[in-house]
Length: 364
Image (cartoon, rainbow, N blue to C red; front, side):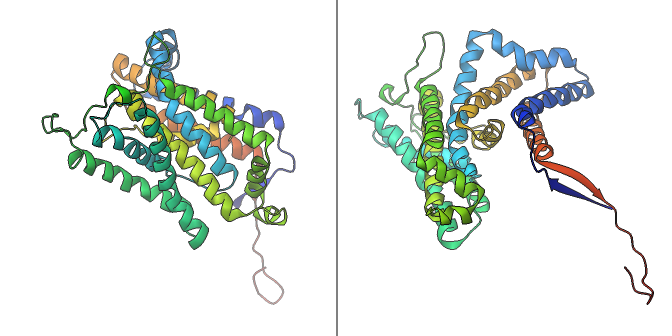
């Protein structure tokens, strides 16, 4: 007996639309069971995780802050994944963008000008795009698997950041701690509301997601992305180049990841330090799939995943649970999203095979 997956001739459109909500519901149920096994009240834990952060203005601002990099990175990843280019290294591109954007406030800290912040944002996008260009070049010209190369580059970026803040970029006023100088006021993203810390980066995220949605919905480039993603051979017949699409999708994705990185260090941390991300680049993969690879869906998905960060901190404090609970919920969500999508697109078949013998004694 063996198990096979048979593609359904016509998957249910209704179930495809409801798939993210089914996955979220199953995640809540599995989370409640997990809390019960830990000896905690499932109702109280889930309330602290999903509801309590929505009742406080400060928590809403924190959700927006954490959603900003998730939306920016997730929107860029939709371009990659819909064109069948699997960029898994957005975390490294996020870090590369943060480093490139910090060149101005760290190396030219005495320069006070309105041009500082625009230059930081441009450098951040260029840094992320150039870092994404490495796996793009390797795939387009050497047929190297972009999953492996983009992922391995994450660890290089992390180690390079650690070396920078402990070595040449370490602040002389930091009492030997591994951090850079604090950014001058001209290098800090302004807050958009007086009631909290939400900064201009959140606006960048919304505009980027809306712009990519318009491109993929109404332009020839969006049609090219869809065609090459579904069938490279059909794309070639239409005159589209898969090599150019590799470059385009990776550079767009890397540029938005770089913008997310410089927005994080400019709007939230205001300096560089060894760790500037709790894994936004990897979490954004969940955001992209939960948003159905639709940039507008990514906005809602980014807010949901941001809620898991803030809710995880609330549960950690109120119920004395490990901070790894956030990663567990995010992993459950990704598992159920992929499981629901698989069962909607495919039918599980049990295949039984018999072993008999022919008249000449051979096995059938």
